[in-house]
Image (tube, rainbow, N blue to C red; front, side, top):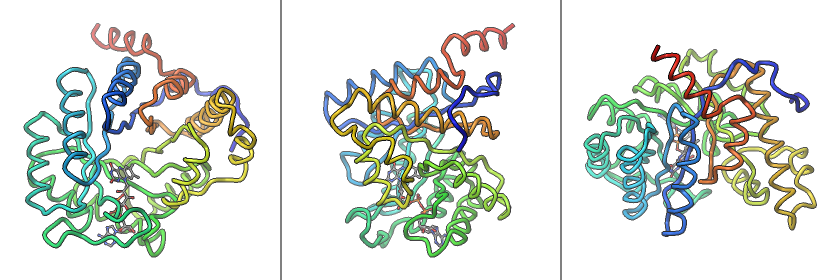
Length: 304
Ligand code: FAD
């Protein structure tokens, strides 16, 4: 990775998108909507809302996405998984999204009901693989379908090649964009991109960028999802366990460095895992040239 410096391609602003998760409590709901309102003026290409198995989380995702459609200028994408539900139940959720005016779904298999690391058991009457879910979505409506991609291989995949074959099946079923699992070493992403392109997959593969709000938590999550945590990253956060203010500054520097390097190397779209916290992501967007007034000026120029 290059040393930190302002992007040489200041004039080439990336397209950005944000991931949020549905709130569990009234307090979290306030935090989510504060973040949504702060990031909305940046004009993201889309925002996505994650999905968990089980009735209450399903309803929370639906309610959040519906409110975004009704009350904001954002184009929301609803995440949807195959976990613990029959095809009929999933199809019902899909139709409810269509009726609510949602036209973009992030289609996923979902994690095993027993948690990460346990064996995935498809529902006997359910969609077994993500490619089946993508096909199911396309049968019901002309949804824009985004899927996941794993630069360091999904932990259950036999090999990176097998994982790329699975991505190809999702694309053949109708997916037109992929978002990657987070990674910290940009070379990993570019090597993966070379392999994906060599396999004949030409859809945009958006790098998923996670601002490290809490290093310990991120490292634990990375271990479970198969994303590697470089020693240099651990070194940067070492000794800051009790120092939240410095940690935030370091997190901003690390994330800025990654985003600017991606842009310098030709990446035009960045997807941020916001964790429902706007500040850090807002600052990174500012650094890469994505600012509210620029968006407004662009819109005005386009309207002339
Ligand atoms: P898949 O593409 O289904 O791949 C999973 C495994 O199955 C891989 O080993 C793959 O190689 C294999 N495979 C897939 N299709 C085939 C096939 N046709 N033939 C043979 N093998 C196949 N989880 C949630 O619960 N809710 C969310 O909102 C959510 N959002 C996410 C967003 C992003 C951007 C990412 C990267 C992940 C997200 N996840 C979410 C996690 C995801 O559900 C898990 O990683 C899950 O274990 C795999 O589902 P998938 O659709 O990502 O992968």
